[in-house]
Image (cartoon, rainbow, N blue to C red; front, side, top):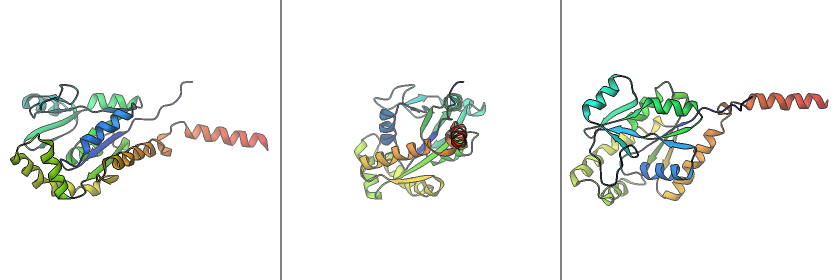
Length: 215
């Protein structure tokens, strides 16, 4: 008889822009082959060094809205004038095969995933910056956005941070190495939860039978 496999986890990492969710997501993926990245679709322009199908699926607004209308998105949201979403089919297939899937999404995406048919598989983590001053410094240091965009992101930070109570875990990303260690510990613990070990009941029954045989 083939060994039972657990259902995969949907690991959600959210934070205000600049708090480190993308950096930590990349580190987690690099060190854990049991986790796949959920490549999102977006209507925003491609940035330098980004690769189609690896960083995002870059879609026109019409194509993106068609996918939403036809139920092809697990979650979707409009953020800073652009649309983002996670295709449903590849996620559902991965979870059924016991593969964990990582989502680098905002609080809106997190809400929709937690309300989806895959909600029992969700583990959600929110990252807080050590301070608002540090958050702004990190945004400026990236050099990816204009001063106007940075200011817009900072103005949204308070609202984004207000959603921290919706998450299973909250980490303060003050030290990147320490935060990564905490994140990896969460994933390990969630994999070992009693209700995520499909063969555990049968194993305990076998142990009980062995105990009885010794009496």
